[in-house]
Length: 118
Image (tube, rainbow, N blue to C red; front, side, top):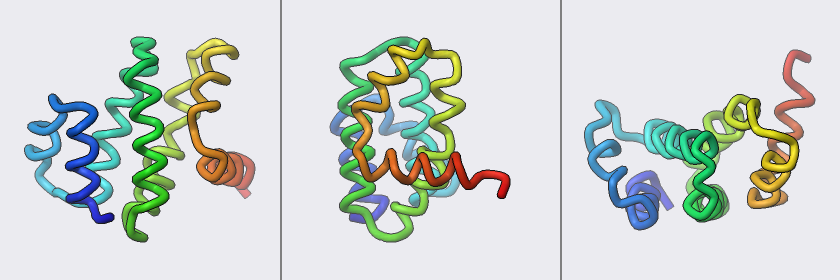
């Protein structure tokens, strides 16, 4: 899967994101994942669990089936922002969010968090 295919799959879940993705000056894997990550952050803040969980699954699908550039974009954009995105969540909500993230992405998150600053 490349970023164009990822864009199509994201707009199937969030139709209203289409214009935002099209209006990005640079259209590439990183801009697509950044826009999707920003939407996920808003869903976390607004406690929109139903759509959030679908989006987390889609992020996992994009990571699992994406080309190397998409994988790198997910790791450096989405995974890197998880701490910031969930910083103000209570412990229970944070656990629920992480339970909807694949084991593979959780491992990458742990590796990033524990290797940060070394």
